[in-house]
Length: 30
Image 1 (cartoon, rainbow, N blue to C red):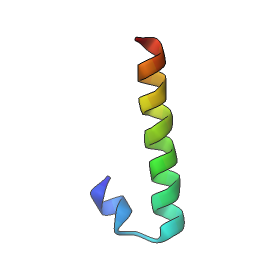
Image 2 (image 1 turned 90 degrees about the horizontal axis):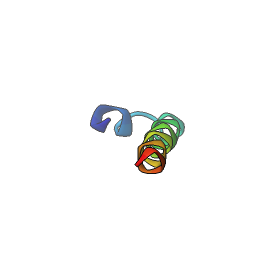
Image 3 (image 1 turned 120 degrees about the vertical axis):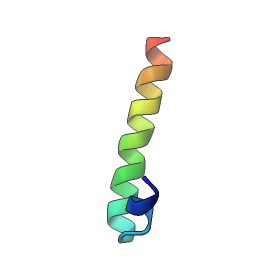
Image 4 (image 1 turned 135 degrees about the vertical axis):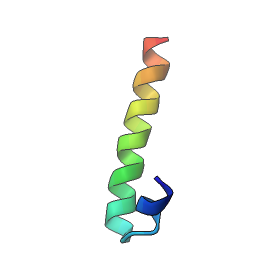
């Protein structure tokens, strides 16, 4: 995750969006 953030802005944005989706999914499952 940290390494991805060091990449290009587009890559970091995509990574964060995926992370957000996963976090929201876990929150919803709870």
